[in-house]
Length: 394
Ligand code: GLY
Figure 1 (cartoon, rainbow, N blue to C red):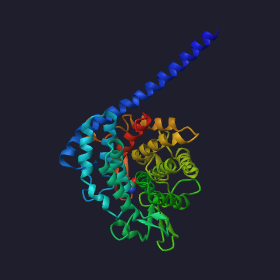
Figure 2: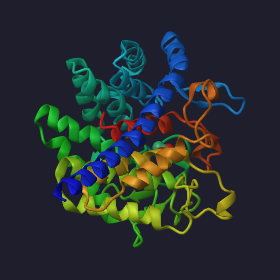
Figure 3: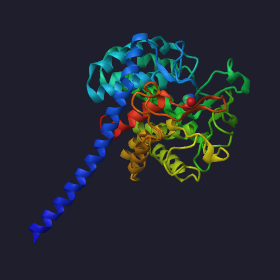
Figure 4: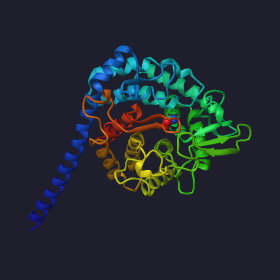
């Protein structure tokens, strides 16, 4: 009798393992397809030393601005993931060439995007190709980013307000929810150097953001403008969302990812709780679609006619896979569901199409009439990252 019970239990366990394995095998295939899709464009990019950002309305590659582009780190970052996945030296070679094109930008102090740029590329290089030159670049970038911290406010200033469209908004010290993504660089550099000053800035920024950026339903404003002398909140607005009081999809995704990172580096339960609150807002919002690929803003009118933002979906998937390691809740089916949907014909480019971008249907900024329903290099980056995380390869 006992023998039969043991046999049945073994069969059930083995078939569960086989099922899990075959599901993971599908995600492995998705990464193989991603590497095939990126091969040609990355070879061209490395040859001409330009970084693909998106496609023009005519379907041509729009290359990142060589003077500075907040998206410049994502493409080399994707190549580092493919290097880790395949162990093929060609990805490393191309990543090194491309990230070298903007190495000097680590000294820029006029915007907050250095975390995105350097953590995603040189951060991955340091992780997968341990070398001291990447380490120093990360330290330099963290020093530059830290110059934007204002102790009166308790935040890093996101945008300067003396030029461009930002100058027209009347802001004094704008901080955007996206800025949570730049904290990973600071946390990492504290670990690398043993100097806690970077981590302290990151924690202060996360706490101030926790206080002021979130609404009662745990959706977030995009921009909080502060008085740089007193730290008082001057206004709560949007730049890339539908309205000041709306939930801009990518902003919700940045918040989710950002607080998950904060928990990783601090073990502070309030960050874990905030990440869970944000995840719950995202999945419970009445305008969150069945297929889990958000519309560009949760509160845009005639929601079912609005463009989706695949970049937000990819960021959410990647964040949930990490969050799932820390929480008693179970987000793994949600993350896998998003990745399966992104890997469908509806959202993933056919091999050899879309000039080497992996995913279609992202949105840069509708209020700026810029990059609407197009591939974006950061959608691809977080999609590849999510697949790597799911397979335990990150
Ligand atoms: N600031 C980065 C974004 O557009 O999400």
